[in-house]
Length: 359
Image 1 (cartoon, rainbow, N blue to C red):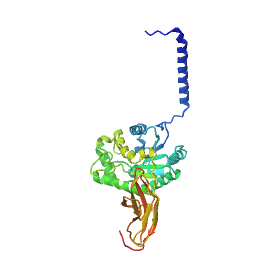
Image 2: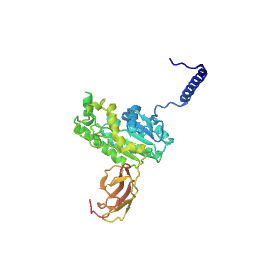
Image 3: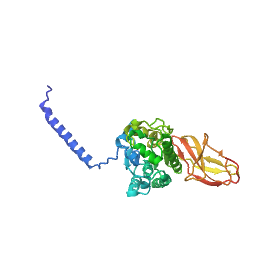
Image 4: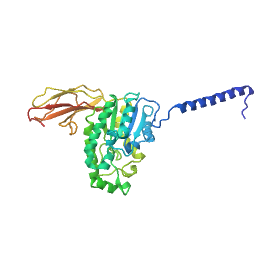
């Protein structure tokens, strides 16, 4: 048995007392710090606000924390989960019950630079109102993004919808699908959801600091390129409209791969500034400043910038570029920089060309 000299006993007593004092002080200081369950990381280099419907609500601290740890990002971001199950795009855009005001106030007063917002919305609007409300969903999406981007100039926004589900997980799912889509065939249901995504993508294209991530196919192992003739594997589904923890883990992969990881690490999208010149009866010349991080560019054109489909011209070089046109048509243009810091320029136009001379 180890023997302790009597001369050391007073020192040991003092030492234990100091340890106890430090413990009490530590507990006292800790108790004075406001408890905030929304904070995940302790090092605040970026703030990530997650809001929206139940898909955002179910991305709880454990799910997000696991994703951050796996990507070595847990010390680089503080997460504020503000998801509210059952809410709609209309409720958030119209500030029902002050949800949006609360979010915007937190963003405006956030001391960290380049805060990030990620949200999922739109599904409950469709479930409650049917496919006929798709137009109003996108109008509310535009209103919501306008308010978010106006809140502060360094805010970065990421929007995602959902993924292909599997009605075989519960017997009630197939009747629900049939009532909503008029079919229980995966090709019909999935193609309809992808059509809704494409409409939202057109809305997002008009906002310079907003990215939309195509998550459809993530559960199948091919995010952005789903097999619309098949459902997602049932082992990732918890009920008719939600995923389980494993499913949300897969769902988050393209969101982090395509947007959040780069934003958290501080790689902010740099929008090219597009200029137009040498407008003739048949062509126009476009130019823009090169983005060092861009791998290529797309020139996007539409005749209806806030609701129409953009025609994409893939460009492997910078500028100038001549694009044929139809005469007597109002055209609107923007340039998209592709790469790790992908972003769109502001929309410019309208330009009316004199002759019908191109395509």
